[in-house]
Amino acid sequence: MEARDVPGLRFTLSELAGAFGDFGIIIPLMFAAAVVCRLNLGYIFLFFGIWFIVTGLVYRIPIPVEPMKVIAVVAISGTLAGTEIAAAGILLGVMFFFLGFGRWMQYIEKYVPEAVIRGIQLGLALLLLKSAAEFCIKDPLFFIFGVAVIAVIFAVSYYRKVPDLSALCLMVIAGVIGVIMTGFPEIYPIGLPALVIPGIPDFAQSVPGLVIPQAVVTITNAILATSLLSKDLFTRDVPPAKLSKTIGVMNIVSSPLGGFPMCHGAGGLAAQYRFGARTGGSNIIAGVILLVIALFFAGPGFQQLISPGIYGALLLFVGIEMGKHGFKTDNMAATLVTGVMAVISVALGFFVGLFISYAGKWYQKRKMEKSS
Image 1: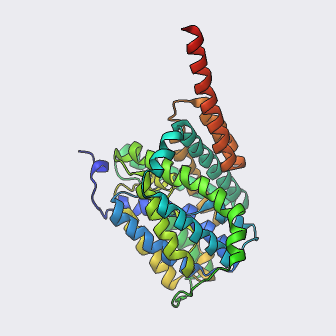
Image 2 (image 1 turned 90 degrees about the vertical axis):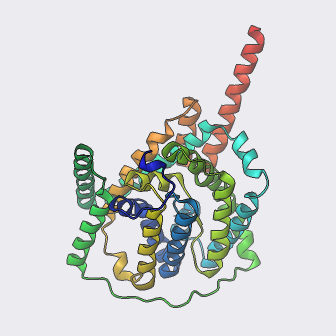
Image 3 (image 1 turned 120 degrees about the vertical axis):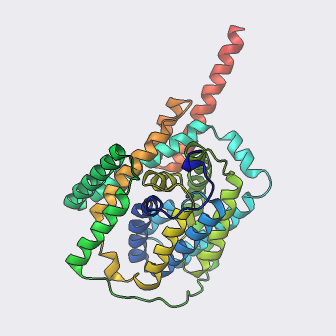
């Protein structure tokens, strides 16, 4: 039996390397959102750490915990208050918790074609590559350095048949360079989380701009695409309803206490797998790391420790890994159109992909009827 088929927990160097795989998405997005919206980064990382550990124990494979990307992007644009973010997280949490019961997710899975899900994966891969390019423009020297480190270590691991520790080595090297350039980050302990109570206007304002578009992304990428990718990578069935429930619980508990809205994600799963994660042990390691950062190093000094180009290098390889799975489709036309449209708007890509898929099925059906 291959190691990737064992539903246990391991705490090896490979799992440690995989634990860093999704940090290239989590850390840049959360740093930016915390600065723009005046959020407490310590509380954000605190709940990420807790839920990484919980999901590692529950799923036993590296099902990731990620920020809800639509909310993160809007937050970074500078138009959100903390209460609006909390309101969106609470509403989405309640929605997905109850969608996890009954047969709701089975119906959604039945009527959303696989080609559309693959298209969302492809679109997210393109978005990751776009983000990597933006990091490259901001910090080209460290981007090139990061790509070179990952490529060299990957080549060594491939030809020597040893675990790929490229993400771990890159983060360690970047951290050492950061300490040399800026000094060791200041110890910045946090206190107990404060209760965030959104008002009725916060809930009302969050629905059209946050809850609806994020719900589409969560259903397609965080639930259906993650479930599908888990079968590709681990030959294990992770039911969409179970993913929906854990997303619901995470947000119901965390959002009122300063946590950022969270979900799972096919991109994060691809990232952790790409860099060596094969069991839930990787999640537990990632959770412990984030807890330490949250409790002691969530101050401004830590935010400046890792150069932006390093995250861009990680995102580049994650995007490539994600794109590979996006092309495993039974309807390339629908997948490609969905992916391209998703770069403009994930919700737009989803609905255009649905239209193309069902129009194609209708056309084939009519063609067969005429020929018979």
